[in-house]
Image (cartoon, rainbow, N blue to C red; front, top):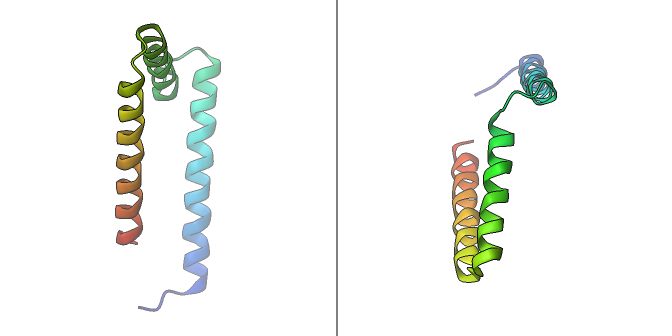
Length: 83
């Protein structure tokens, strides 16, 4: 299908503006002390790393990291195959 170059540029600009707006909104909320998903995930990662170090659960840490990498790779390849 043929898509005019102007519409591609417009969609790219709109997408960029949405991303910038989202990141600015998240940044403002964090500065106001409002808990958003990024701060919640950072807290969970910190708790997880403390648990691993205190209990010397190194195999658990390796398996968790491997599973996270596998899931992210799967999601990335799925998205790319849909494009």
